[in-house]
Amino acid sequence: MRSCETDAYAYLTITSKTHPLDDITLHMRVSPDRRSWSKGDDRHVPNRLRPKYEFSRWSLASGVSEGEGLNAHFAGLCRRMEPLRQQLKTLPNGMNAYISCTGWAVSDTDSVQFEAGVLRDIGGFGMSFDFDLYSENG
Image 1: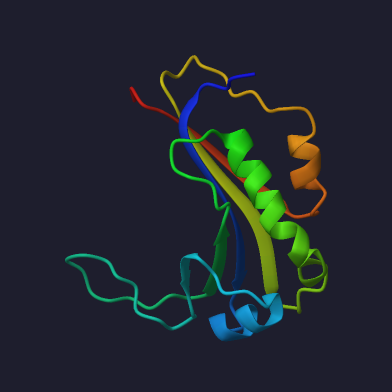
Image 2: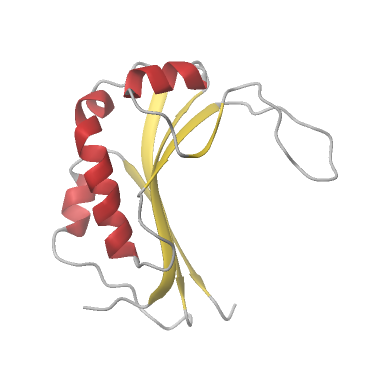
């Protein structure tokens, strides 16, 4: 099966308004590899005042190369999350986990197709799921 997206990504994110990034990393026992910061860090916004982040963010990417579709990213993310299942089940109060994914399609009439079991596997982690799909022609 070939889904319509021309590029995609998926990642796990944990946020907290009460725990710094180091605490999240210590709990997860693995360093983040996607945009991450601690509450109070400077935001890097070009040509603006440097506001501070109001929450901490820890993110782990799927580990799949650019140009691959959502099915590959979901499978990669599940492989990376499986060894972290216990840490995800026992997040301290004030830490919230969710899965994000984004895909780009050639046109706004294309459809995304998921392989059997993909959503079951992702849903098996029992967390919120954020999905964005964009059309390359606007």
